[in-house]
Image: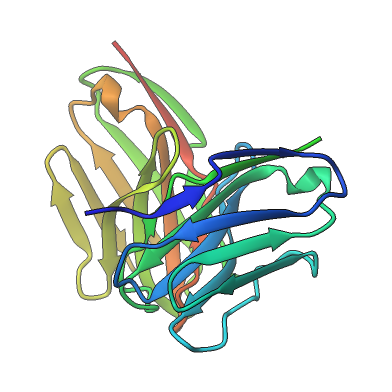
Length: 115
Length: 111
């Protein structure tokens, strides 16, 4: 079946502009996660959603970052007033439940470059 | 502090060699340890180890969880060039879905 999809695959933006990154999880997966991977680094947790519960935003690096998940499916990660240090690959993942005993399936990521 | 440390950070071997990748973690609220393989883009799931399942094997890959030493190893036997990738280790803790990742091990398998 279809996996996790993300768009755009690449995004180049000027410093100070806002960007929106989209994630479409696997159908039926109730949990959705956003991670960030800077060059040569591991994945850094940003935020996760589970059903109608309040999201865990503990990994968001600043108030310029926000995310929403509409209708329990598609999610959008928004970065306002982008900075050069925001340049990274943003990865989305989904799983059947929020417990860490369920594996997370990743999308191909969006490579964000802030010039 | 939740922390996952992988070693080595990079490794170059020749086809047919056996490699062992290491991952160590903090004990607080440990629930699971996962291994992923990342080639060009999306990390792909390899194994998940929990208190009730401390050893997993799939083909040439195997993984063991050592709860006493707070570590895990990923073994790859008879390596092939297609095994070249970044191998990521992650731990889950508590009742959240958050995974804490290590910095990854970059494996290059030469012909």
